[in-house]
Each structure stands twice: as structure tokens, then as C-alpha cells.
Image (spheres, rainbow, N blue to C red):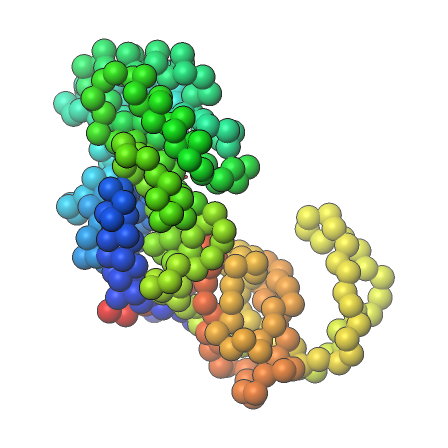
Length: 353
Ligand SMILES: *Cc1c(COP(=O)(O)O)cnc(C)c1O
């Protein structure tokens, strides 16, 4: 029996719509996309919906997630710089990877030779966000000639990542820098990959120069959000993932704790504010399976007070609905909460078409 009573409803039609909408929007600007599904651990049901929506290329940051996608009509991208010891699995379960280190490229070429395959490489360049990629042009050009010299590697393109670590905004200057690097390469390359969901605004405003032709999009497809300004995109769904969590306690309690306040698991002291007695509920979920910063109760009058490992404390005082213990409370999930829901095994997933 499945005894997991917290249920995640995934609306596949909304995800199909989001994929189709994003493909059209990007095509208008000469941009192809790879759908990034690390947020849902490349759940196969979801990836199939994205394929129905027109996606032909899927990326994830874990090879074991890509492994789930065997047999689907897809090009699979490994988007976290792989470790040298992952080379064999990489060749088996991904056709494309983002790369930035020569030792790893050597290992990948060796594994590809052993398995009789050719692997496509996107060389990453760092334009200032200071996460992955070659920082200077000379290193990039050395890697270009290294890749083109290998028997089982194909230089597929170059890519960059902005708005991921220091949240540096993609702008025309960065895109020009990327294009200049592409031109310096001299080889024919198919892909110039400008980044993630933080590149959509720039693209929509016509700021993507010709020749920059690819984006890797995760959050915008799953939750319809543009990342540079953190706004929802019109015409897209942001409620494809609704979690239903049982209410396990409902009592009136003071808002001020009684006793001396110590430290939490991060070493901080909570700073409660006295707002009198409140009607408080406990939902059967906590930090283990969700992220209390990126969840949004469907009833806007429910306020989230906080969470511990397995309990989510909510304030129900202002609600028009008289919630009772045993009710399932619907909560719309944002990106990190979706990620938690799929990473743990504690939530039952239900698809609706
Ligand atoms: C996660 C990730 C993406 C997708 O980012 P979103 O903001 O979800 O669109 C793209 N590229 C790389 C390298 C990533 O790690």
C-alpha cells in the first residue's frame, strides 16, 4: 500500500502549454531551447508532456536523472560540469554535456571511444557570474583545439551562464562578448547558448544578437517565471504543481512562546512577535520535503509562520474557510519546493492530463 498522504498534483496540460508557448516565443527570436528538468528530477511523465509540447532536447544536472529518459526521442544534455569519474555514465545517458576542464574532456573522449560513440561538447565560458566556465579566451581556444583533435568528441558549441550565482544580468554587452568568442573560434559550431531563464527579457526586447541561438530553460517552463526580474510571464501557467497536505493539528495558541528562547538548527535565535492569540494549524510536511520560502497556499488568507523538519506551521485566523484536522490544504509550489518534492521519496505524485 502507498501510505504517503501528501499528494502532488501535476497538471501535464499546463506544462505542455508552457513548453509550446516558450518554444514559439523563442523561435520568434531565432532561439532554440533545451528544457531543463532538474527541478523535477527529470520525472518521466513530465518530460513526456514537454515532448508533446514540442521539446526535443532535455537537460539535467544529474546523470541518474537523465538515465530515466532512455528510449525517448530526445537529445539529453548534462548541464552540471561533469566529474572525470562520471565519464562512462555520461556517455551512456547523455548525448551532450557542458564542459570546462581538459582532464574531464580527456576522460570523456576515452569513455566515448570505449563505447563506440561520439559525444557533443559545449565549452562553457564565464562572462562574470563567476560560476562555471573558462575565464580567459586563451584557455577557451586551447580547449577548442583540444576537442576538435579528439576522435570521439564533437565541438557542438559554446555556452555561458549568467544569473545563477552572483545573479549577473544578461545584457547586450555580455551577448556581444559571447558572439566575439564564437567568432574567434573559427570552427563551425551549431550552438551558442546564452544561458537560463534570466535571458528571456533580453531576448524579448530584441537584445539577443544574431548568432546567439540557444537558451537552457528550466524555471520558466515549469513555473512560468522569468528570472531576471522575477516576474511571471503572461500567457504561461504558474500553477502546474499543487501540493495537498493534510492538516494534523488546529488549535488556538498564543503567538509569543513561553520560556527562554535558544538556538535553531542554523544556530540562530527565533524572534517571535506578540500578536495575541491565533488560530494555528500544523500541516504534515516540513523542511525535509518542502521549502517554506517558495510555497504559496491557494487560500491567500493562510499565512505561513514557519517550519521544522516535518511540521509546517500556518496561521488560519483570517481564513473564511473553517479548516478541520484531516482536511487537505492545497499549496502552489515554486521552483525550490518542486525540487524538494521530487528529490525526496515522501510525496505521492498524481498526474492529471
Ligand atoms: C539550472 C540551470 C539552467 C536552467 O536555469 P533556470 O533558471 O531554471 O532556467 C541552465 N543552465 C545551467 C547550467 C543550469 O545549471
